[in-house]
Amino acid sequence: MKRLAMIVASSTLAIGAQAANWSTVAESQTGSIFSLDLDSIERSDINILDEKQVDNITVAIRRAYPAPKSVASDSKESGIHHSDQQWLISCKDASYYRRAYVYYTADNKVIKSWQSDKPLLTSRDFKITSPKTVSRILTEQACKNYEQAKTK
Image (tube, rainbow, N blue to C red; front, side, top):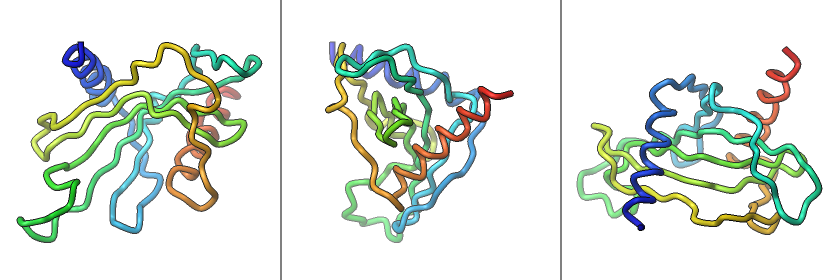
């Protein structure tokens, strides 16, 4: 079952990534570059159990890791070139829930993947972002792009 979840997570993100419209949004202090797939931003039909009807959105996020400074890196990110993630975002409080991720090597081989197995979500499952952080910038930009697309 775990293997099936990995296959589903990697294929879901891989299919979305091929037709992506990546827009660079932020760079972390460690040198990672974060991008949003503007074509993936859409209203989510996932309901949060303990909230009234709230519009949540889904978005694909890519993190490109900096090149290692040496081959003998002790970093846990060693070997990871980039990762694709799918977030469920609540624009009302700038929070998110990471639904899936896939880590890739430089030649696009999957290192690791994961997909949430939670069938139901509550607001406690969401991580509230802090001001002036990469996650806040990503959530705010995704919400801004979603609102702009709605008005077109």
